[in-house]
Image 1 (cartoon, one colour):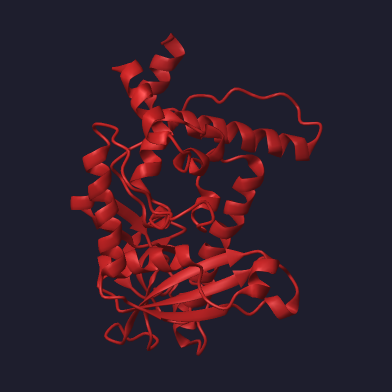
Image 2 (tube, rainbow, N blue to C red):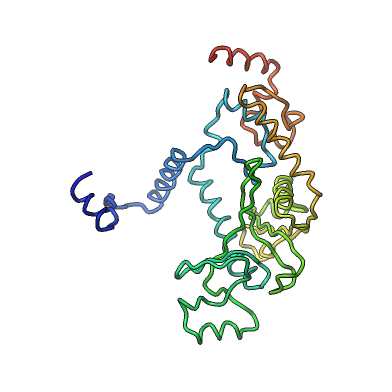
Amino acid sequence: MGLKDILDEFHGRAPTIPVGPPIGDLDEALWTYLRRLGEVEASEVNHDLDEHHPSGAYQFCPRQRVLAHFFPHPETTEVGPALRLTFGWGTAWHQHVQDHYYGPMGILLGGWRCVGCGRMVTDAFLPPPCDACHPADEIARWQARPVKANSGWMYREPKLRDPEFGIVGRCDGFLRMTPWNPASTRALLEVKTINGAGFTRLTQPHDSHLFQAQVYMGLSDVPVTWFAYYSKETKPADSRPRVFRVSYDGGATLEEFRRRIRLWRQTWPTKQLCGGICESLVDPRAKYCPNAQECFHDDIDAVIERRKARTA
């Protein structure tokens, strides 16, 4: 640490960020940045093997976790520039409909952060404009409007946990189905964005989304989930979301997720190859499994035992 670094730390000054080279091609510069961002995040990620996310619950397989130890496929988990943009569109749309549609409708209950001063309110519908950031007459005008608009707050997605099983995730929101009435019927909100082709064929929620929502309902004791699927296309016919109402299954899905986690905890220390979640290679889940080919190989058990013996 040099003298300037010591003085900056003493005076609370932020370190100077090095100036980069001039940008000649904006498109290429963005792609390079996204690629580099993925590399940095991959090097910093904390691979907590006993933290389980509901978003990945449908695909969670103890057998695959053991197979991935012996047959790693790091390329299947890399977030490249194109995939990052896809994720980015979905994240932005989630925030938009929460802050500008469901929040102003008076049905989204939870935590809100003022985008001006960072103040937080909890267990609330969309608040009036923050009195620390807005004059009284502006607040009064918002309150008098028959149809509300965003008032300068950002919704904070509820965090759900099951510490015993290491389950942690964020649902898209808690709904109250009578606007501005916190005592009305409760529901979960799940917002999904899909491409135009998938949207056209959509007749019910995807199996993975149903599994995820059932886990959320089990963790939050909420009886219903409303799915709102939005198309990424811009055609007017695709603008209105397709909405599905799903009831809680009484805990069957959450217990299945917990069963897999228990099996994972039993088999991982010895790298024992247990049963999987797919019946065959044509199982829909096998299509997205990076270790499907190894999983159904004729002598995979013997191969695993030989690899274990070499590393013993």
